[in-house]
Length: 257
Image (cartoon, rainbow, N blue to C red; front, side, top):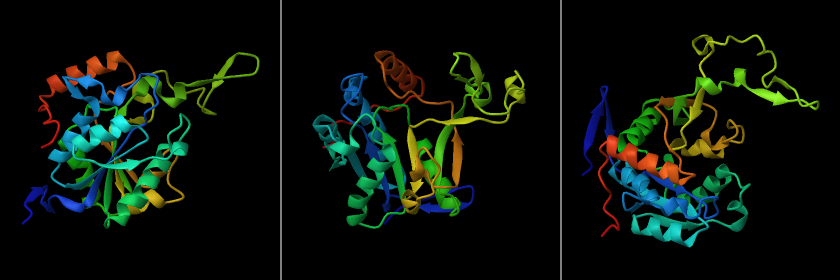
């Protein structure tokens, strides 16, 4: 019997096979083996896997990669392997295409309502963030996705410049040359964390989904955070360890029995 819990007067059933975690990660990187680097003596990607296992909703777990070590690490963390073809594992391959490739195999094993896409190089994630995003989709059927976002007004597009042929600068966004220099006076500008994406399964196939990640569909709701650390350098590993310690995240049991 599945347990139920209450959030703002709405009851949700827990651990459904129709709610799936899909971790994605390529083997190729400027930081060799970044997805499996030790973070507090546990492979980086396992921190994300552990958060998904603690989710009140996720009932199936998959990892998509071209890399044997990533797939094996995922297997030890309770994730079913999906071998990604070479054309979806290059430096120019699109993550949305990798998600769609994996979805064909996942849906063949059973119906899916929600997919939580996880990035293997992000360990700054908790089950609370995952479940809040899932529950956002459960509460509002009109949404195509709920995605963690943070404010980065210092990099507001109205402040961006493009380089002209003569080497001088011009506003990147046409008409933004008269924008205020005060961040507080600029319209809200959010950036995706890329820790997770909570996606409506049907939206993944929407040909008109918002770029550059069309699998998010057309109606994307932000889940506001303070940002995350997607690991690209050894310094990012140290930042991730500090975040995990500061947030009291439990150390994963790895490998799973």
